[in-house]
Image (cartoon, rainbow, N blue to C red):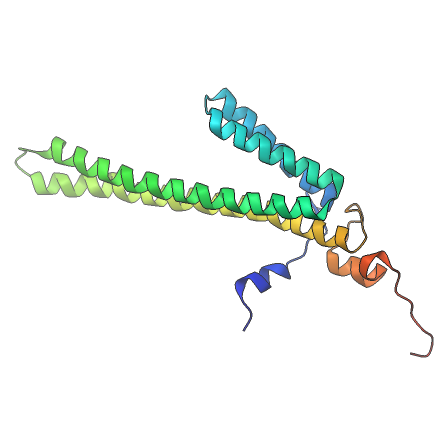
Length: 191
C-alpha cells in the first residue's frame, strides 16, 4: 500500500493552462498571480497578508525563472507552510465566531417566550452556514495551492533531469526521452 505522499509524487503534469505554457511559464504565471493577490490585499488594507503574498510570489517567480531546484524546493515548502497557517487561522476564526454566535444568541433570545426555539434557530442559522463556508474556503485554498506545488515539483524534477521546463513534457516523459541528468539514452541495436 502506498502512502498519500508517494501517490502525490507520481502525479505529473507537462504544463499549465491547457497546454499553452510549459512548467516554467506555468509556475511563473501562478507566482505572478500570487503577487497580484498581494497587491489586492494591500489595496484592501491587509498589509501583513500583502507582504507575505508578494514575497512568496516574488520568490516563486525567481525560482521558476532561474530554474534552480533548491529554490523551487524552498518555494514549495513555503507554499505548504502558508496553506497550513491559512487553515489554522480559518479554524481559529470558526471557533471564535461560533463562540460569538452563541453569546449573541443568548443575549438576543434572553427573556423571550420561546427562548429555546430562538437559541436553536440562531445556532442552526449562523453556526451551520459558517462551518460550510469554512470547509468550502479550505478546499479552495488546498486545491489552488496544491496545483501550484504540483507545477513547481514537476518543474524541479525536469530541471534536475537536465531540462529547462519549456519542453512541454512531464518529468517521466523527459527522463524517458533524454535520460537522467540530460544524458541521451543510448539504445543498442539488437538489444
